[in-house]
Length: 440
Image 1 (tube, rainbow, N blue to C red):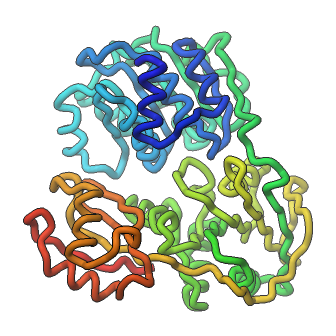
Image 2 (image 1 turned 135 degrees about the vertical axis):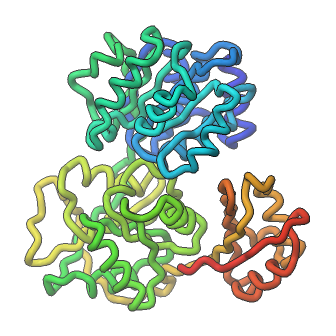
Image 3 (image 1 turned 90 degrees about the horizontal axis):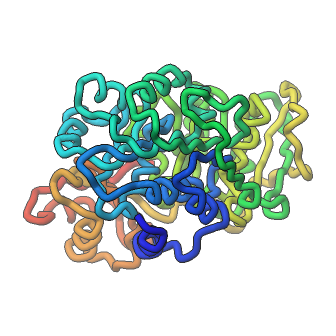
């Protein structure tokens, strides 16, 4: 694709009129091998996507581009960026937890671009369902995370089965030394997104001391003290995440849950409800510290101390993104050892009261129809407006999956249960539909 085609698509389909310097630089170096060092929230997905598209020839009936990512959530995020701007090319997403038969069907016509997790991609290759022999460009996103999760052998196997002359694009949140020899990245163009990281003037780091070893009461007081916004509470263990979320709900605080033991659909729902305003607080392990498409988080709260300096950085990177304001709160007790890399600007004692507290602004409706039933976002929005009598500006974010959809509706617009009942009594595009309220 030409640079003009790419930028026109980005503007028209993603609503981004101007690329940032890192994105411009990446597109300029294509199709040469490159190393992109960039944090989450810097726009790196669009940067490597633009460089990748500049490296492609016209659609040829073979796979030209491969993007590897460490998690299904990141695969879906990348897919949502690449597919709209890769006009004329077929793009597919392959990842664990997705119905294998549906992925097999998506490969019945050879795609031009594949976004995948390493294990699922290898599975399809070994079953003879796709070939990388004509690959022109290979992107390895969040290489440092892929290594951390133990995917190096899978990456080596994938490279060995592909076209060895393919151009490599490697992204990482940290410096890489040495570079992986199997990716043929000798003397790559190095692009750094230093100017895209949050400026200190926009990020406050605040110390909150708990008077007792169990910090739950202090956390509740802190959440009740903060102005309205979105918050992610980081803990170090899955069982801790469950315990903290349960305690918050008992205290009447709407809080979601995110960790690796949850089913994929549960994790996707937690992110969607944080983004759409139905659950403005999420308790999570470090799985949510990177690789997720989470909008405008106002507060990062360290309930447990981050285990490494890198974890501290990645957690904090969820807020104050792209010049926005954000606050980081570190809750400590006498049982905590605060690492040297955890630095705060000032102390704070929560009052337990806020004149404008954190609260849900929407409720989320679940529909048992999705893409495979030929349902689109527009269909859902029109159905809620017409059949439910809801004003268009009161309908929030809509997410459509293969066989289900969710939609946010302003809390002041209608009774959630009554609206779900009314909609369930109607037909959506001539199909029976079951609508329910997703519990917070």
